[in-house]
Length: 292
Image (cartoon, rainbow, N blue to C red; front, side, top):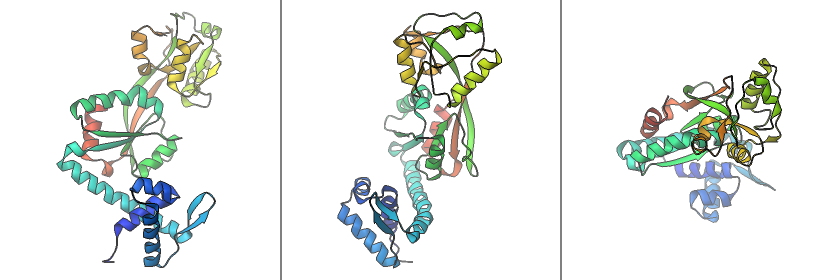
């Protein structure tokens, strides 16, 4: 196919993902009429109908879905190859896209980025979250992100996906005033600000306390770390958070770590990646700034 226009297929993939010309035009910096014309040209070239319209936007036909499944990874591979070769010869044009849930972005990744940008001030970094850990793995598989930082590994992380343990982070109880717990049963006398009961961190905490026949419950539930910290500062109870997220607050005595006779569960932070899609700057960032 000597007359193959790869740009047409790239436009087609963006439209398929956007599901409308307006959003696609913003991503491609083309007018909607230009994009529509390109799609019509591609349909004419292939003698296929690739989209049909529904109330919610453009939907792929069966032929369109087959074409997207075939072309998407190929387009991403080409984009990766282009980006990698440019970065190998000019590190000032480097960019890293990292998938990371918000609680790890704040408590762990932000510090790594600060160190990296001191050495590479022109380094561009995008942080992308997702509604779920499975969603982050999908972004990795689609090459939307270069690698992922996560504490929970979903079942979708298989085949060519590799996992490297990076660091363990302590969880702590924090309070507005100093509290020293000598008998673990004393924990039942306080109010708590916890993540939701179905979260892995809360489940692990409850399992540990069950071993000591201690039962606590959340008076306030929040899946956002900063919210739990703020509620503690407002005197609403004892919060359960990652220690690295509150180190500066503890140093400044805005909150206090609750003294306990037991150790609380730790969080294992992992690097999740597909080796062949790591660029030169990805490897530098991983080896130098994501400390074990």
